[in-house]
Image (tube, rainbow, N blue to C red; front, side):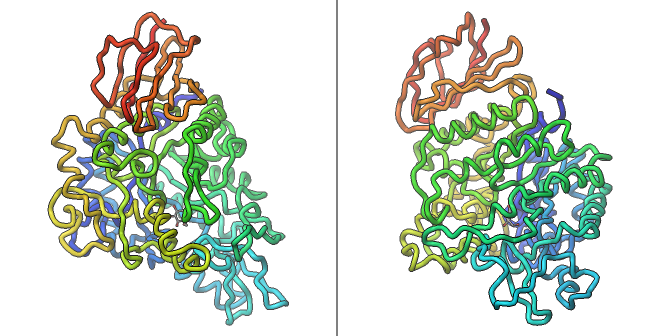
Length: 561
Ligand code: NOJ
């Protein structure tokens, strides 16, 4: 396996709107990020993934871009951006930008032109279709509700939007559009940025015969996903992008890919395929989805979670590379989703989750606030939510498909706004995020859970993350060792080994609030063991042949033959 810096890195995601507001308008901004670079440097991360900062009317908080080469007014100026980039680089931190090119905003000049007439030079930058029966070209439902097709009176045709109608899909069949995208990527790389996280990049190649989607029970629209996920020309497009925009630079790339399988993942990330470094798959974050997806969640089992991770760990172990994440700006908070947010177990379960993730093979991602132990928010009024996905689901699903109570259970567990409440910097009003009125309310638990508090406390979750990051720098086995699951059938313990030559680690994580027994498999023999890290105090001489784990306990041992 080739050794590279992006395999050895830890990435920190910033969702700028909710990170830190420097000018009191209630919206996080670029100068706010620059202020906190020393904080990130203290944590020890290597790369920032910056969610979109481009000009945008914010129908979907910047994932609807109206100008790819300029900065959103609320976030600052290009000078602010350049200063932030320089300061990050001074601290040895790289910047990975979000690249949103499955769609643009309908307010992008390309779309403004495109919609004007059928012979406009920009017409084919987007996907326009005509029908004779007064029906949209397909029955596909859009991610944020309604049909994926929007009719335009002016030219009598429909345009495709897999997300909101203010996010028209770009037409990747058009080589002129593709070149515009590559040129824009080079513009940012020439500025000195270090790579791209690519938004729903496995959606860019559509089945151009546009077949109907299957309609599942209880749903009005068809599911078109198999006609645009990992589509017919996707590998060709990514290889072209690599050749035209990436290969002359030393970059890090990660493709966000709903519906990607391990087999596809190998093709996207294989060392000699010249596509991407890694992908974000969605298999674990979809666990427990109900009939209406995330809005009526069901319980999930640890064996299911372990099966998913093991499949990806083993699938990419010789060729390709994994990205590792519990949370991001589209997911609930890690502790609330996978651990335990109660006063008693919040910190210990957060540390356990961090241990489990950072000890697997792949590049770990920390979502802002995860390092201080932030949790989901329980707003009880729909008017306190800001996310288009949450608001549209509430509008479309209640009361016919789900009751108010049912969907609120889903919203509290899974809404994207759980991750979007402002980062809690200290115990002052609005958690020190802004001196103004925040665009979304802060989580009321900020007086207890905040960065100032965790920085002061050597035993805190922040210092634990810091230690995990340092261990990664000191132990090649954490980066490159092979992964093997142990105690496969156990519903409480997630345990595995990592092996690199003679070096072996044993990782034990208790995902439950109970006290299960860890049993060392007979195949694992050792003559000497050393405790590398643990989230509770451990007697180092204790035998590990059979031991009782405390609730949410995590330990990592180095074993020597
Ligand atoms: C995935 C992004 O992460 C999400 O926030 C966004 O709404 C959709 N793609 C559409 O861009």
